Image 1 (cartoon, rainbow, N blue to C red):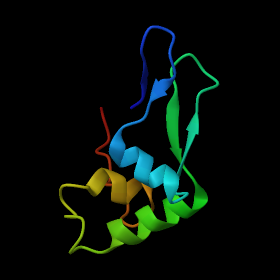
Image 2: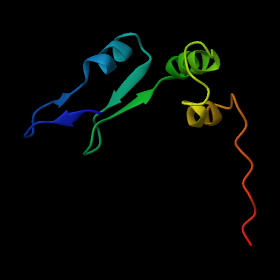
Image 3: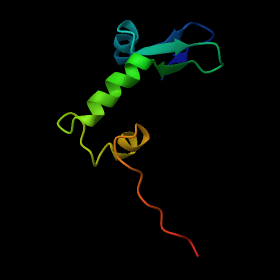
Length: 80
């Protein structure tokens, strides 16, 4: 997501900068590898977007829809 150049400040991708600016993500540079995290508002917006089948193809984004609790996880077959 974000990288550092030779000890300099972390670079934030332009798309992420927009999400940061709108308060949908937060930037954590406390670790060796800086990371972006969704805020509560960001998770709410992501949930709303993923729930709308016109915005997010349910087949393509099934894993995200399942993680957000929109769709149930598929049943796992019992292994012998």
